[in-house]
Length: 251
Image: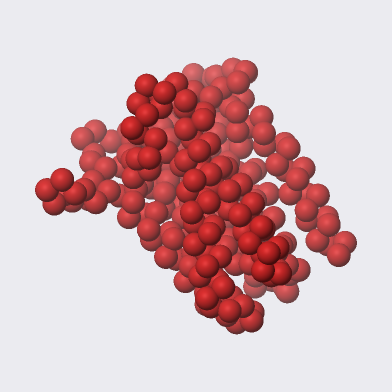
C-alpha cells in the first residue's frame, strides 16, 4: 500500500520527531510485558525475574532483528553505515528477532532453572499484537510494499494490511487454544510459530514486493511471486515446529 504524502512522524518538536513506528513498537512492548507479568505471576513466577527476562529478550530481539535486516540489505548499509542504528525508521527482521529472543530466553531460563516452555507461551500475545501494529506502522514508513497486480481493482497488493491481519489471526488462534483446553508447556508457542510461518510464507511473502527473490517467477497479472528467501526457509521452520510439537505431545 502506497499513500502519497504520508508522514512517518506523528509530530515534531524541534529536532525531536515522534514516529508511528516507534509508537507502535512501544505499545507492543508494553502489551507484551503486561500480559507476561499478569499471567506469569499467576503461574508462580517471581515478578522481578519476569522483568529481568523481559529486558533480556527485548534487547536480544532488537539486536537480532536489526542484525538480520542489515545483513540481507548489506549493499545499502555498506554505503550508509550511519543508518545501521536508526531502528526508529523501521528495518527489523521478524525472524531475526524471534531467533534472538528464543536463544537469549532459553539461556536465561537455563541459568535460572526456569521453565522456558511455560514462559515462551506467555510471550505469544505480545508478539502477535506487535506484528499487527508494526505492519500498520510500515504503511507510514512506506515499506513492506505489495506487488503490482493487473487483475485486481487495486494497483498493488496492500501487503502491510495482509501482515497486520496475520497478527490478528495469530492472536485469535492463540486465544482459541487457551480457551479450548489445558495445554502442555510450549504448545502455544510452537503452534504460534507454525501458523505464523505458514501465513507469512504463503500469503504475505507471495504478494510482497521483495528484492530477496532467490529464484522462481513473478506473475504480473496476479501480483504474486515465488520464491523469496523467506519462502525457501519456510519448509525447514515448519518441520522444526512439527518436531517440537511432537516432542511436547510425547512428553
